[in-house]
Image (cartoon, rainbow over all chains, first blue to last red; front, side, top):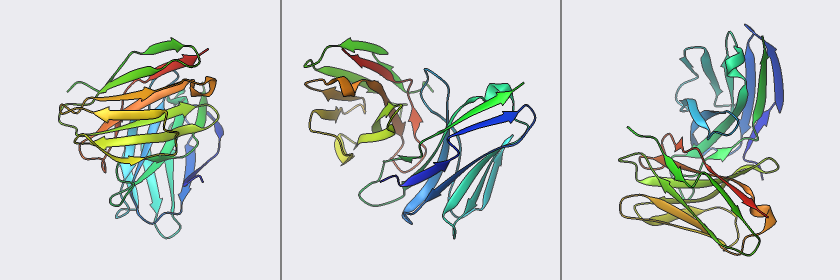
Length: 115
Length: 112
């Protein structure tokens, strides 16, 4: 079963707009929540990550919002640029237990930013 | 620091053959994970190695195997290739497995 659910599947945003991608999870053992950006023909690149002890983390134009009680987290891309057009994956991994070292990925969001 | 490297970058094989893919992690990283990426199934976890030991394994048949060497380099092997094994195979390295994972560029495997 899909342990991390991601939406939307695709997103079209105008240049300068805000892109928002949402993810939800059920497993309370998840302790680390990264976002990856992937361009065609490349491996996923780590963009930003958060742990459940903070509700928000910002790095440049990228912000993760985290709601522990709702088991949801989201990526906000401010002032979206055409160069941000890529596939974005949310993921989660536990900090302990038998599945240590395993990332559980969402299905991905294809973001297109129109110039 | 150099990033994660994977060789070869592209492979074309026929059904029934076997293939070995290689991954060199970031220096100092002891955890290496392998993932299969396909348009239909997304990113699926194959297995993870830490200090030469397989720590956990995803839901793939026994045709998929791996190993890790004392220098943390890892290989994965797929025997008796099937058409459905065509995918991008990614490896990721991490210091200990429960922190950030950094991905290599992948090996694109095509099975004819």
